[in-house]
Amino acid sequence: MTSPSPDRPSPSLPTDNVIALASGQEVAVRTYGSKKAGETLPLVVHFHGGAFISGSLDNGCTVAHLLEAAGARVVSVAYPLAPEHPFPQPLEIGYGVLQWAFKHRTRLAGKGAQVYLAGEEAGGNLAAGVCMMARDQRHPPLAGQILLSPMLDPCVGTPSLRAATGLATDCKWAQGWHKFLRSACDAVHPYAVPGTAQRLAGLPPTLMLVGHDDPMRDEALAYAARLEAAGLAVTRHVFDQAKQWPDALLTPDPRPCPCAQEVQDQFQRFFATTRCPPSP
Figure (cartoon, helix red, strand yellow):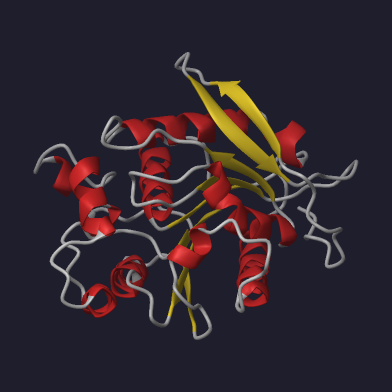
């Protein structure tokens, strides 16, 4: 696989499309990046944040553009939102888009393109859950998962989250979990709550990115530690300059955040360390 070029052009205008899944459903996606003839790029299926109950493709543009700038072709997913579409519907759509992207990987990112999952906040939860679905279905093969401040703990009681919400008795993340999970059974399903999954073997390498004062910091790092304890490859990084994460990741702001270059560098290193020779 060719390495991402260090002098890639400025981000191009993304393209919006509606794709048909194997299930017959249709879903809107936004594609970022372009490739030169004969070039092979990492192909990333990406999920925006919004606590399961809000957000759109526009809210995913910050992370998607950084992935593109790191040398990837990105397919961002307009997955359905709770409460109208609770678990497992967003994951089923996400897995369908992953299958579609893998089928069309040569056209999208070049021959032998490796496929990744990525997501921020609630999108990080969906990326982790879809990653487990791909493992259990034994298709498609994944080169890695990139999780930025993922929502992984429906108890919403970690010290980092309590520090961020203060004395409040409710928060948008608690509301999101309540509307995403239909029942107590869903709360123990590994695809809905990957952070408490008992079987972690077989998952691909993970890049975990959080901010120092990030409400999701503790649950994200706890999951990274569990993956590592299971013998899996994990890269984690805590950004000191990540102000107001994860909300800053969801703001379609043309001005780069203070840690944008650092995030892009982490993406580039992860792509470089997880690449392998192209498949025939």
